Length: 510
Ligand SMILES: [Cu+2]
Image (cartoon, rainbow, N blue to C red; front, side, top):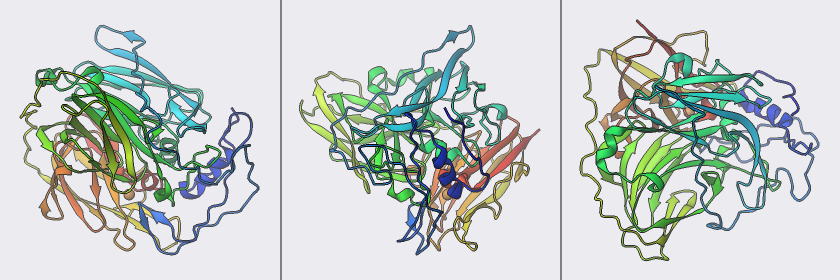
């Protein structure tokens, strides 16, 4: 593959134009998209910023046959394609005390929407990287071999891992290199995911496909008799904009135009199900956005969140979750006649997945009334404020700030003594214009205590590592920084925001 041409270090909002210039297209043709002009208003975090214009030097655009680069892909008829099951990774070695996996980071051409081939950056060749199923108490080593012509790295989102294995934004795997990450799985069962986290590029790399699923199975949960095996299905949601040639359009200020929701890598698919209970592990891998999910029939029982099971199942008529968050649900199709269907929809984007009841089944297991006790909250001894904001005083792109500063890998923003329990109040200061953020803490999970002084919502329950922080609001959260030492980031998980600096780092010290 041709090398990435000029590597310009500035903000991704302008550099994304650079990198799409050099993005290789199999077959030798390049889709070049150098002109971004926002006539109606720039959009950040799903809100209009008023009349802003971003114009870059225009250049001829090579157009592959059969489509028009830049022109939006025609919308496909929904429910024509079965939902893919992401492949489950098979260990290359099973040691006495740990399992080893190898995953290539590689380019791939994928049919995300019917009839169009899309160039993607992938873990293992699929839109959703191989599902790694770890087990509580049994470590896993994963070697990622970078065959791309760009640097990458891997962050296990929600994983409790040593700093050296966390995929720090400055700790990269260069082209041609490989890197083994140690994941101890010394945490309770949870749905995690892994994605690229190299500074400035995590946004574009993750958007183009560098994401996968990691599940920690917990033997302690076996007695709950939740749906397992073929009835325990991870579902990764991500949104993209694709032009009529199949090319991914990456224009950070226009993230709101990413109108195609991919469900495990297919647009609006269907999933044949049996008339019984299923566990679905929903992962919001969308770069920048929220889903507000409803079912047209049947009940969604939420059983888990980012850090594993809730104390008890909760019936949820509607579930909202933002970039980076996970929601574990049980949907019971029992009693629905063969041939019927249930549609999962988003409040804004409409139907995203249809469950087709195609098989009879006997399912006599009831959902347990109690799932687990959450760890007791320790007494907090330190309070801190974290303010997320943009500074538009110099125009577009804005400065993306945490406590008034852009990310600097050489600066430690918070020094935390290991073992301390702290309460952080995370503020979203972006009310004018109004911009949504999500807050993600590495290394440990936290509990939400309150929102703008009011009690937390159902979406905040349980052990969290990522939360929505709407404009003008604040979220109080409590975390204990036990176990590991070293530097870890915390940041907005709208990746177009973190990649231009809305990130800071803490250092855990003895
Ligand atoms: Cu943000």
